[in-house]
Image (cartoon, rainbow, N blue to C red; front, side, top):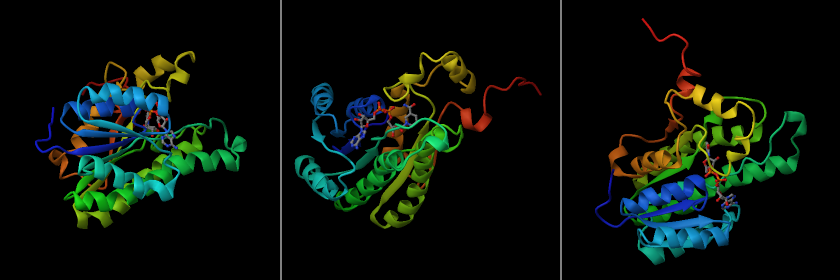
Length: 260
Ligand SMILES: NC(=O)c1ccc[n+]([C@@H]2O[C@H](COP(=O)([O-])OP(=O)(O)OC[C@H]3O[C@@H](n4cnc5c(N)ncnc54)[C@H](O)[C@@H]3O)[C@@H](O)[C@H]2O)c1
C-alpha cells in the first residue's frame, strides 16, 4: 500500500456512500487527512467518527450542485487542514432508469447537475487551493457505463462519458499548476447505488460472467486504485480514465475459448 510521508489532505465527495467511505478508509490508513463531503448529515457524522479513528477527519454537509459555494468549501478545508492535495469526486446519482421515451427534462437536469456540472465546478474550485499546496491529483468517478451501452441508463452513461472528457480538458489546463486529472470507471460494485439490482433474476451471475476475475469487485478494491491515482506513484498518468471493471469492457465477458 502507498503511504504519504508529509500529511496530505484528500477531499472526498460522496464521502459517506459505498465507494466514498471505502476510499476514505483506504486513504486515511495511508496517512491522508480526510475531508468528507456529502449531502447526508446523519451519515456524514457517523462516517467522520469512523474515519476519525484512523486519521484527522471532518465532515462538510454540502450539495455539489451549489456550484457557487464550492470555493468557500475548499477555503474551509484548506483553513482546517493546511492543504488540499487530492480531490476524489464520487458524489453521483443514477436516478433514472428506462428507455429514452421516459426521460424528462427534470430527470436529465438532476443527473447532469450532480454527475457532470457539480463535478466540474468542484474541480474548478479545488484547483487554486491545490496550486497553493504545491500541486495535487483529482480522481473523478466515471463508470463502466461510459463504455457499455444498455439503453436504460442513458443520462447516467452520458454524464460518465462526459467525465472522461473533463479529465482530458482539465489535465491540459491544470498541468501548469502541477495538478493531474484522471478518472476511474468501476464495474458493478455492491453499494447503495447498485444493490437495487441484487434481487433481479440472473443479475449476480451475469456480473460474475462479465468480469475476468472470480469475484465481485469490492469498494476497497476501488479504494486502492484511487489511492494510487492520488499519489505521486501515478505521476505518468494524466487526463486518463482507468477501468476498474475486472476486464469487462476489454473482453466483453469471459471468453468461451481461451486456448491457442
Ligand atoms: N457502485 C458502482 O458499482 C459504481 C460503478 C461505476 C461508477 N460508480 C460511481 O461511483 C460514485 C460512487 O458510487 P456509489 O456506488 O458509492 O454510490 P452511493 O449511492 O452509494 O453513494 C453516492 C454518494 O453521493 C452522495 N451525493 C449524491 N448527490 C449528492 C450531491 N448533490 N452533493 C453531495 N453528495 C451527493 C450521496 O449522498 C451518497 O453518499 C458515483 O459517482 C457512481 O456513479 C459506482
